View 1 (tube, rainbow, N blue to C red):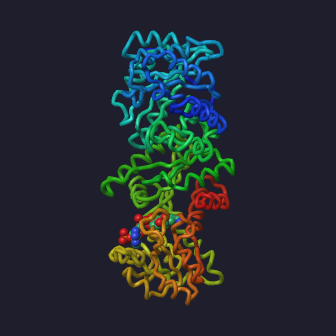
View 2 (view 1 turned 45 degrees about the vertical axis):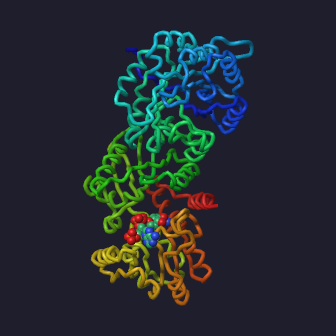
Length: 557
Ligand code: NAP
């Protein structure tokens, strides 16, 4: 094994766009687009393009493609047994590398790197010898060798052995490991592979759990990360697009000191929170990044708590990550309070009463982490309603809370804490009665739980939809959770109608309530306010709420 010490990165992490070559002109056009969009390198994946018949003109076309590239390139011909498409002879493939690296003709130059799988390199002395003649471990003018190892199914059981084997080969200039991450916790091992590497290393998690390893590559000094030119052109599951990487995640501003935040939930890939918080960090110059952090639900509440606790604890305790907090969404909000109780984290009084929290804040003093959780949904909703009350007081008003899930719970408790009287309507009446009973015993306010059907005849000063009915791509387009008869009654009594759903911004309920002359509060208002409370708790700065509003509105357009 090599005696080299851990490698200290001297240059910033590169962004490489993979291009599946099927036609030279298209590939060069995409490479030019990648350069314009801010990439540093392209990877020409020729495994579909190179037939491997031994026809010398095929290899010559690839050599010309490499030489015409507007960006430095990696040349890769990935065999089927390592997740690629090349299905022909290894000797023919190696002859193609020889032609592209050392058999150059006038006006041609070698690719910056060739990528060869560790398994192929280890399997044959002959192949290894020939590849070594194509590359140079030190001289920048010659092609460098990327020795790579991929597992599209899971973390390879022999990962350590693979890394040791890579290190035993002096000819490699870069090591690359990519495997399907099974949970967020796999990212930590990938970060350590980069940190402990004895030369420039690429360590990437595939699938949605691996996004952290891709976006945070510069924080740990990785050699490069991959980003696709378009959604459909990703060469590995979970690869972000170039626009997501550079614009949403502000990749070029990520460095060792960058603090890490995120949204924990399931699913979270379509959450708007990364867009708004990253835009906020960018605007105020905060050295931080915010990522989707999926945690799969457990089969039982106990399993859920155990997996949430294990993941959050590991993220908090892994010092080099500098994890400073997260938003927590469905289905983990109630688990978060139970985990906080079991772990001794601080819980604010609102979250303790509601039994659900949506925010985790980690502060560090003398290397020790102080962790607290709170619920920003509840004050955000109540402040949104207060914003349209005019001269009226919230205390004493009757609030129709439609839905008894997380949002309904938060609003019913917070309304009662403010002296209003919640009436909870839910499909499942028992759940409505249960919530009303908890509110009564915690606050002494005469909350009631009523059947879904009784909404039509109910008289409320404020109606709040806390169900997903009306959501974009929802099950019943155009549906409203609150019946029109209740809205008409509301109009007569100058009531306020609020929807917690914020995508779309104008839900069927918002539209109809406006037509009927009600005072309307959009879900956007609550969403922006709850995010602002989180942002302020994490950064100590006043949140740029106009930017948050603009980002949500642009998404909706
Ligand atoms: P949740 O915990 O899953 O609760 C969902 C509630 O909606 C339950 O009471 C459920 O009734 C009811 N429900 C679901 N589908 C329904 C249907 N087709 N018809 C009638 N009732 C239905 O979800 P949540 O966390 O409370 O979130 C609910 C909504 O609030 C989501 O749309 C979310 O976008 C929104 N929200 C917005 C913000 C914001 O900042 N604007 C913040 C949090 C949540 P059962 O008990 O009968 O199943």
